[in-house]
Amino acid sequence: MDNNDLGSDIDKVLVTEDQIKARLVELAEEIDKDYAGKDLLIVGVLKGAVMVMADLARALHSHVTMDWMAVSSYGSGTQSSGVVRILKDLDADLTGRHVLVVEDIIDSGLTLSWLVSNLGSRGPASVEICTMLRKPEAAKVSIDVKYVGFDVPNEFVIGYGLDYAEKYRNVPFVATLAEHVYK
Ligand SMILES: O=P(O)(O)OC[C@H]1O[C@H](OP(=O)(O)OP(=O)(O)O)[C@H](O)[C@@H]1O
Ligand code: HPA
Ligand SMILES: [Mg+2]
Image 1 (cartoon, protein in one colour):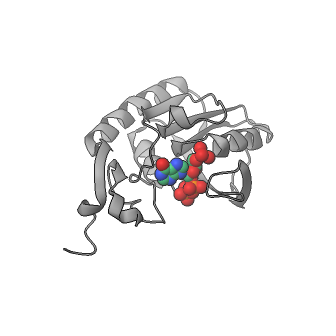
Image 2 (cartoon, rainbow, N blue to C red):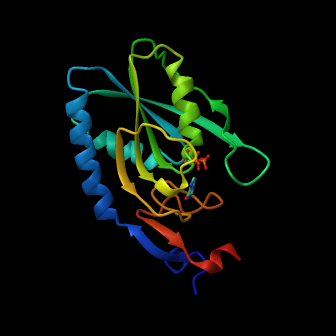
């Protein structure tokens, strides 16, 4: 078998490429409506949010500006500790701005919970969240999320920006991985 073939690494497809495209159109319509007449800054959280930022931005019909942040969660174990370090900060000044943070996934919620409070302290007019995926059963903190693509079960997922050991981000759908990948 081709060692570089992605297909054999996939177990279950949870969200198809068509479902993602259709949902993005719906979310973009809501965002266009909710921010009509307002100046919107969308903030992508690197690296996972690259796909959803690029596709959401193109589905919007309003002017937006785009900025990026890179953060790193770290702690003693493999799980996010909720302690977050900024690796790359925004270029934009948030004073008086309407900010929409765009993420690939909310898992424990710890990353976004920290991020929203950090961005909230910079004097924005508003801070809201748009995430393509959310794992309701994994939530360790509750956060108000205005726009959600899909709720997924509490399993490790890859694709559409989400990685396992930095691979699979380019898979155009969301899936679980076959067991042999982890061995
Ligand atoms: O809700 P949480 O449990 O905090 O997890 C969600 C965060 O974890 C992932 O990013 P990661 O830190 O793996 O970096 P990446 O985006 O570069 O893959 C994902 O993109 C979210 O930012
Ligand atoms: O399920 C996941 N997959 C990949 N990266 C992640 N970061 C948080 N949850 C996940
Ligand atoms: Mg991320």
